[in-house]
Length: 526
Image 1 (tube, rainbow, N blue to C red):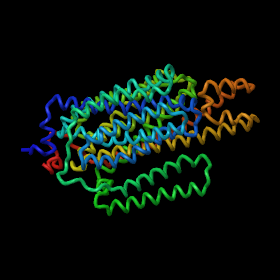
Image 2: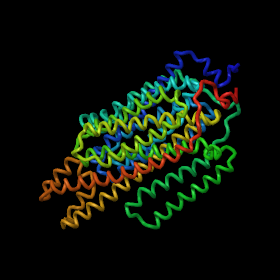
Image 3: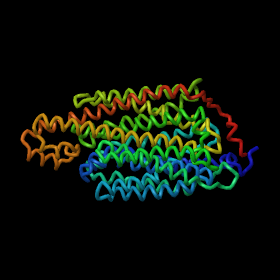
Image 4: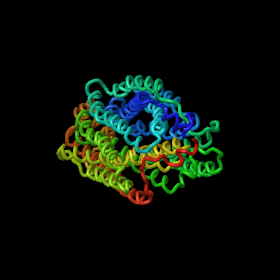
């Protein structure tokens, strides 16, 4: 029989109402994070046009992802050692305050810095929220039933996010896409504070945090990010070489240190685990593709096709809505399959097909076909996202539940960071090269200052000034839009190819049994 002080005993001692209210609090947290991710992508072209900073376009997303990915493993480990509730509460306050600062930003640099602070709160939330669910529901089948609430919450945020982002941007101003987090944050703060219990899975006193590992992670990811961002901007070769060298050295030092650390932030045994390692690799690929699509599809629809923010938001909505529908369908079928890991391959194929079809989408493509394509991509992600979490939590030792879940989210965020940065560099480089070639052929060197920056295609004032100052402006603008669409098409082909390479990783995932028994590692500390 479970001892009353054991984690499973504490979870079993909660009544239905407290579990329900605690889950509602976690759902509100997830709604807040999901809303932020979906509304910002739709609003970004308008934000760039207003604040005049296309050079920092990718940084609005990557600064958030960079700080998130650094904080996720740190707070995943702290949650295992101290219990997750204090960090969930702190993260809600930080995320909500940073959202307000984003809405008050007066230039792109301020927005990037506020998004970086927001990423710290988002990383804390991601590191702790997902690991709270198996704390409340130790049994796998029970957990799968209750996770429908999280899927529904995620779906609600995703359903209204893109269209809400477009509506707020078009009618109230882009700043409201950040202010919308404030009321959700207040509700989630009260529910979590009132109903979520503090549960630890290790009876030993908390160990000293591996701050050396955290610093090395920050050095590795930060220098890698700067190298990717500055490479197409023709920065000093010496600077780029130094950054690349720092990134490689930090990675080597991180591997060396984590093997020798008494309490490693990234346990080497987990990275080499034959079941967990391919799941982390798939999470990396999924994050790469998902963020590359969600950030650059709206840019193609608005700057390339000339659609309004609201129209672009409606076109992206099926992608995020069907993530939830796919997750809910997955919850119904994954327990009944003899080989549930095969759903990962199906999800990869569907999302790769979406990226490939986006690479063939033109302004003349019927919106119904774009809708159908986005629906397929959402269903694919709906098969990938929950199953990666389920399989990792099933395979990982119970006392490392937080750090394993955090590592899964970290790899997804690293993939997202690389997806937005690398695809941003690809799109920017290809577009500028194509514009310069076009202007050289037309002997229009004086127009480079206007057309080399895609924000000219988004800002109504810039468009009016360009049309007033330039003869034949409409034909030049049309040609520039086509070149931007071609650059984004090229990036989506790369995304599709990368996702298809993930099928090799799917074959490496071992068989996972989703039964109702408590896994052996869940009883280890009872």
